[in-house]
Length: 336
Image (cartoon, rainbow, N blue to C red; front, side):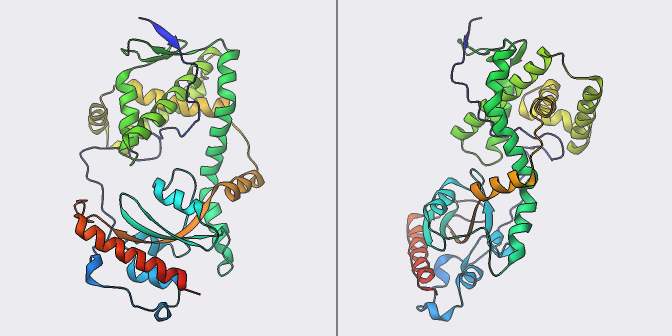
């Protein structure tokens, strides 16, 4: 079996697959549809004058088919990769207070970019910031992984290797290996989280190589302590419980096409990350990251698919919806 050294490994640290504290994917379980049933675009046209509404919020309330835009009156706060690419890109291209229009897989979005701080609601910034502090600290840790993991591998005499034949194992780092079923399972977890196939493969490769590399470094440095091993075992027991017991857990493994070691490796990677990159980030550092990397936007969504079945509307209906979206964009731009 011939392995080649990977010289351009994706050590970007997108995210760790979280297996503790959340319900894992069950492909037989239909995701709950949170989109309310609404009238289609051709049942009601916007008024011909922007003077009939008091602002963009009223247009959102009247026309948006996104329940989230109504339940979050302050708008969405988000960072890279958290929204569909079209929505994120459109928001980034807008100046503060400007309106734009884009189309995503969901439909047409009429977007207004807003500053993170809201002069009408001074508490909004702090509320949203507090809600993502833990996520930002995780992102800062991932930055540390990106910057320091390659050097840690070098210091410990480890190399990330790929099987040239494409067989099993497909990757290895020191004595740690990655099988094709494990790699496929990571891809499945990403696709079930809404990523397209290309991004799912990219992120899966990044994560599984990061995770395997961190475990290999820890093992090279003496391994986990007895206390850490107990915590890993407790975390695994928690995953089994959250899955609904041993039988449901086994079924989950079968659905992913992996064995019990996949879960143990995934959990061990989280503990390896904490052991190697346990950064103590100040609130000021977290706030700086928030201010530099987060966006805020409000939008109207006009869907181009059936909210119940997900079936795409035909071209004629989409054209009507696009025309309405363009009209609403003009209405929004005329608001003062």
